[in-house]
Image (cartoon, rainbow, N blue to C red; front, side, top):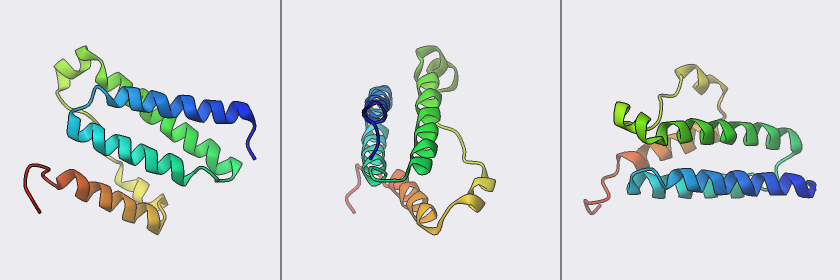
Length: 115
């Protein structure tokens, strides 16, 4: 079981991510909110080592996205996100690769067109 301060940190990070998502286009916001919610639920009972990695990665994500959401940055780039280093694929599990592929497919789906 994790100490109370850990639970507080996780909740605070989750709320921060959802706040940062508010600056994204509507389609990306929904996708990002759903993905974050699923990931936080999925890692609710992970071990302390995995929890540390999980929190570090999501903190880096929140910082990176917050920097991109600044109005001045958006005016310059007009883009959100960054490309994944292909070398990272070598370190992913099969489940992570499947999840990444499904996320990729979700970004390609046009919400205005019926399936």
